[in-house]
Length: 367
Ligand SMILES: [Zn+2]
Image 1 (tube, rainbow, N blue to C red):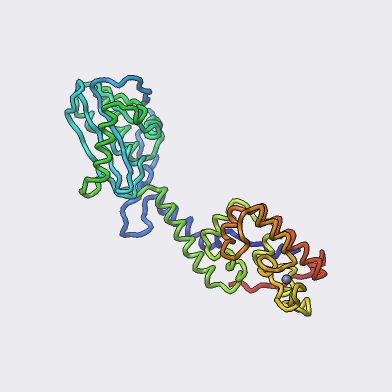
Image 2 (cartoon, rainbow, N blue to C red):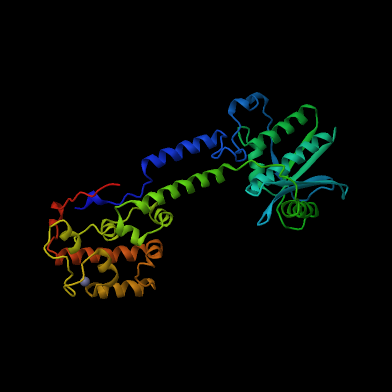
């Protein structure tokens, strides 16, 4: 068999090591680029309050909002990220706050920023019982978890715990968004204003770890692409999958079948390939006895494959060209695998290497 040529779509080992190192640095809060803003790293466990000192925080699903409450909201629009809260007392707006976040922040970070600022304000309302509303279930859930290491959550929990110690009650409520609750609508409007109109320096600019991870991955793929483009091997594969990002996305979930790998790499019982390794006198394809029989020829043009190719194109609605190949690999994999199986079967038959191909173990230079 041709097992020696199985396409490896794993990230090269050295790049994977570099990536793991970068991720580790990111998790501990060290930035990928020294000049970048700080990463929103997790609060270390030893910095959390002692378990016996952690308040039990719950939130309730609000049916009818009360007349006196703080409403919070976060907003991410194409123009920016913002958060806000509004304090409504007996139906009258008495205080509001808009918070600008860096454009790369997530809406979740914005929701938490609103809750954090609202909680801090609530503590100044001494002696009162304060109700805070949010439409972010994810944020409220996180706040109930005593082991949460999200730095904003830790701060919110601390503020609520300290208020409780002084005998003040801060109650959290979840409110369904966009159902016309005036306080919630107002907070939403203010958060959007903060996102789009506030021109101040962001009050919160910690980079979300998810974004840092994405960036690290992006960089690995870029480095991989450079190596892929400049390497001497895999010329055929590059013909079909010139973009490593596409290639990676296409194959990362599932390995290709052996037949497909042979066609994509060109390492198979193709006359031109066998001829190159002096295993066959003639490189030409029997269809015209002139054109070298490469895998590309079989896949894209050889009339011997005409009927199978026609079937493929009818089934998929796609034209078998090298330009279409990335899309075909992505969306019409089953049909492609069937077609490749047919190519391998036919070429083996015409090149008389049926199962005899197992003696063919050419060495391929590594970059
Ligand atoms: Zn041919």
